Image (cartoon, rainbow, N blue to C red; front, side):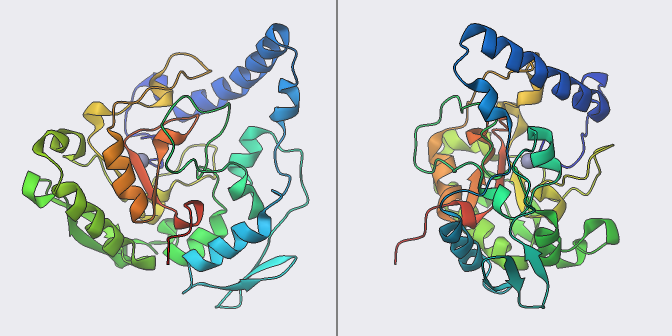
Length: 288
Ligand SMILES: [Zn+2]
């Protein structure tokens, strides 16, 4: 839902401008509270942007995940096959969390490790692996929806057809359509009890801007899917600025998506449990 780019609801509670204001205020409040309660170094966790120690492995994983696009990397740049070069680091290591989301560089995308295979639980503060995306790379691959560059690359995929899920439109770039079709086949083979979590899908492609924000979700690239909203939990629905994690999505569903390159929004501090997006670079290397 939050990872739908722009809110579908007209509710004033969900108005993006208000959310931005709330989140800056909320961050200040949380820091104050954490220091007051514990005084144990919470402040040091408030700054982001330093390159992770294992950045070379992460970049290798990125190149391996998108071989049609990424030619390689050196100490400074990620190099695309079309000649585009992106600086791996912008040299800034003192970003606020909002700046991390709005203005990330390549290495910022790996600021948090996706906890593949672990039992889902309350994530640590601001741990949103996958939610930070370096937009120029994704625009280069999937197209710019604001310039009508995404829609022509979509194709319909039958969504859990045995359970009557209908069709969803998804990008053909990076084989996301084939990956989602494989997910759909495996989900469709689950016992009937699982169907209620899966259909109807709450959406795939969505090109809408959040007012005052430049950050796009993977829905803007048609490389994400929301499953049935009925069983979803979403951080913005929580009244508190420090969201208490909740989840009702069975782990079997998550594991099937992960096997085909999709990460789950239920592993995020800013949780979005109906949300899955194609981000194989964040998943462990497939065996063999
Ligand atoms: Zn979503």
